[in-house]
Length: 346
Ligand SMILES: NC(=O)c1ccc[n+]([C@@H]2O[C@H](COP(=O)([O-])OP(=O)(O)OC[C@H]3O[C@@H](n4cnc5c(N)ncnc54)[C@H](OP(=O)(O)O)[C@@H]3O)[C@@H](O)[C@H]2O)c1
Image 1 (cartoon, helix red, strand yellow):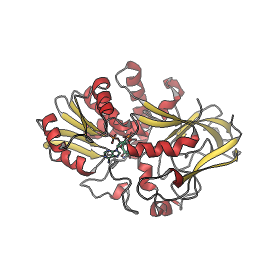
Image 2 (tube, rainbow, N blue to C red):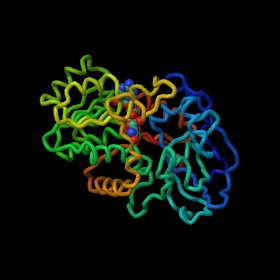
Image 3 (tube, rainbow, N blue to C red):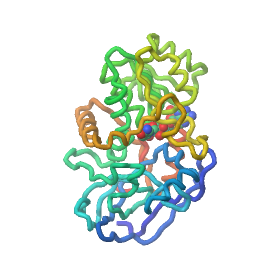
Image 4 (cartoon, helix red, strand yellow):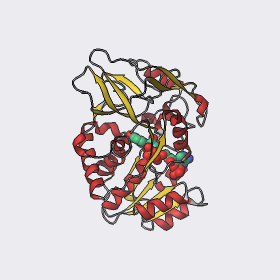
């Protein structure tokens, strides 16, 4: 067990693409849990694109009404998904040895009473289901919010049907790769848009997408989409927004279903004060937290698909807490294939 508490602190609000110098690593003695609290040591941390949108002064100001906890405010431990093992506990809900998951921040140890970040994550800190018998890392990747997002958006809202055409953006990312496979399971013609030939190869050869389009080397995305979707687009799962979203929307069929799930093309340029919930598109953005009460069902069903081989996933693992900021910046740059996570310990 490490005898130091290491945490990634937001050192400055980034301008545009974050730089490693916007973060710093701080160390202090490992904290002790108080009454009703537990101490967990991190196994995996999650680096997620949406965090970039919260890394600005107005979002941080909104969040400071909360009690202490990781948040995207200068001087605080960076918010971010945490999967770890309870090593000391004064709270019977989180017994020693339990694997817990929550937005507990980029740090190698955390003390919590389970409440932390309920405003941004209504599920609070959850005890992961050990009966599923899956690798612990999955709770930070495909069985975490990154996988639950496409699961609930596809199965509860977009509901792809056999014979329909589905288009997925950021198709080789954590969420897009799952969304496309769920559309394939339903019998759709599935088109994925992503940012490299290696990503196109993965989604078409390994995941079963029918067509992959590398938007970085395709001069006319509209023409490529028209060729890939001759009957139009019935199901549109959008992770990126911007001009790619508009090119897909131009092909919507009369009965189409569409959800904007993320705006990866714009996180570095969203003006301070703009939030997911106020994004000025035709509909509010999909929010996975609306399905908090059903998380256990989603996790169980996806774990079943993984075990029977119906659902494939890829973890893009970076080692060491000191590399967390770099790993996060890499996701914003599109360096990841599948879900990028940071391994702190096995
Ligand atoms: N609404 C919710 O409840 C919810 C929950 C979780 C995640 N999300 C959102 O869902 C989206 C996907 O999240 P994820 O964790 O699965 O991330 P991800 O797709 O694994 O990683 C982000 C990807 O965005 C792509 N990207 C970056 N800049 C881009 C640009 N200018 N244009 C097009 N694509 C760009 C990159 O892939 P390329 O190489 O393909 O460019 C990068 O790999 C994110 O926008 C995230 O914020 C929403």
